[in-house]
Length: 368
Image (tube, rainbow, N blue to C red; front, side, top):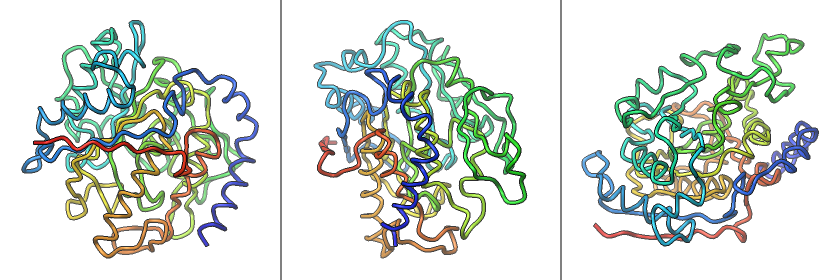
């Protein structure tokens, strides 16, 4: 059933994005998706990275240094950052506070990223920590973590189901899909379109994506790809509006990321898997969080998501649950058979490597 469904989604996705595909491919830069290291995933584990639920500064610093240097092949920490960044860049760091304080891009990780950018020559005032919703960031405590001079930005005040606000979004940059919330009029442009945040279109030239490693009840997993697709555009509720049937994340996610603005500007992904979520996502229910104590580095979000998907499936197997692609709705998850095939379809569009034969995961275990 899964393979049949995947073929249907692939046909629909290619039809929906065919008009923008050639322009996107032609405009890719050297650092644009899937970046200079397609298929390369660096996994760094440290047994002391979290103690009593609290991230530990020195192990996190060691993990960040190892990950960045192994990803790039650079001989030093500063050289690794200079592969991607230089003076004059304006950089957005896309955090992931959907799970609240329980499971979120951690402050120690964020500060290591800021330090790396500054050492590569990026001005403090040109570093912007971004999340789509302001209230979500403040609830997770992110503003308290920021070094002096680093800016905060958001596109909307808070989550709502309608999501047609446009003030924080660029009216000229959007994806149009024949997909609507129940009861909405598909003839209206704002119903058919998802507009991209002004920050991404007009204010920054590079993005560092900092997702966490989590299960998602309708997309199967939410890691690098979904942190971008649902974090930078409005009108996303239509992609998973109502269980058990109105789930279009399989095509929505890759269609959004096929836009040139994503292909050109997303240059680095650092997946915070020190804490991870194996069920009940995307929220942060404590009973489903485990201390994975691993961080993942790559320029290829497809390879990262394929790797993270396997990690989550292994944990689910330990807990006696089926793989995410075969799971059914239950008391904590709304949808049956989540559309984890969004990862493969992103690979079809050239956003990264999906085939295991073309993915190299290099694992490093650091000692306490």
